Length: 363
Image (tube, rainbow, N blue to C red; front, top):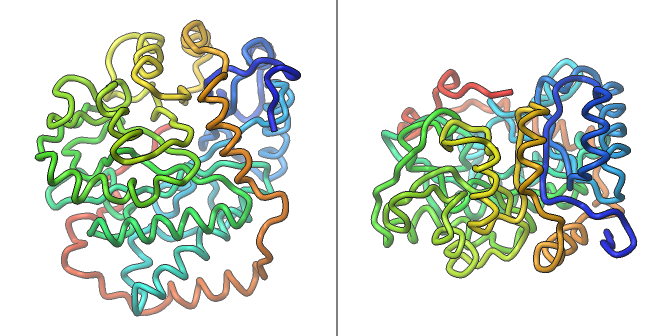
C-alpha cells in the first residue's frame, strides 16, 4: 500500500482528462500535483487498447503505486463502456422486474456486478462508482429512476450489498452513492440544486437506511442535495452537519468522495466549491470535466493525503483482491442473459421511475 513517507506525496483529488490521450500539459500537471486518481467518461473511451493505453499514461503521470481509476458503470442508462467493444448490462431495476424472488434477485445482482468488475479490471479500472443506494419516491425526478434496485429501503439496502460484494469479488472497489440519499430530489443535481423537505424521521427510515446497512463499504460519494431537516442552506457535499450525520449516525468511516464539484447544483467558482467540500469533511474532491484551468484552480486548495484520510485510503486499498474470486465468465454471462430474456411484467409502481429518456449522461 501507499507509504507517504517513502513515496511521493499524493493530493486528495480525483480528476478527469479531456480526451482519448493525455496532452503534454495534462501530463505535466498530473506529475506535479500527483492526484489520488482519475475518472473516465465517454469522451475518454474508444477501444479497449486505447483505454488501456490512456490508463497506463494516467498512472505514469500520477507517479505513485496506488492510483485509483474510476468509472460510472452501473448498467442501463449509466454505463461508460458499451457495445460494440463491451457487454451491455441492465439497469438496476430490471433485476427485481424479472426475478422470481428476492433471493434470486440478490444472486443475479451480485453476478451482474461481478461480471462488470471482470470487464473493468481487464482494462485497469479498479473503482466503480456503484451501487446507487438511493430510494426513488413517486413524483420525483427521474435522475435516479431505474438506477435504483427497488422502491423500498430494505430492497435497495440488500441489493446494494449484493452489488458491492460482486464488485469486490471481481477485484474492483465499489462506491456507494449518493450519501445520504438522492431519491427524493425533485430536480437533477447535474443542473439544479435539489431541496428535500422531508422530516428527519422519514429520512432515517427510508433514505438513510441503505447507507447505514452498507456503512462498511470502503468508499462512498456525497449527494449535492439540501436536506432542510439537517441543514437548511448547504447541500450534503458542503455541509458539516450532513457529513457528521454520515460519519456518526449512518456510521460510515470509509473514504468519502464528493460528487462532481462541476455539477450545476453547486454555485460559485469551482475552487471555492472544492474548498467548501473539504472543509465540510469530504476526504477527496472529485472534479470531472477535464478542464485543465479549473483543475489548476482546484489544486491550490487540495491538501496532501495524511492522517485519518490516509488510514481510510489504506483500508480501502486493502479490500482490493490480488486474486479475484474464480468465475466462468461465459457461463455467467449465459445465466444472466437467460434471466434477462424472461418475460417482464413491470410493476405498476415502476411506471413513475423508468423513463429511459429522462436522464442524460454528462461528459
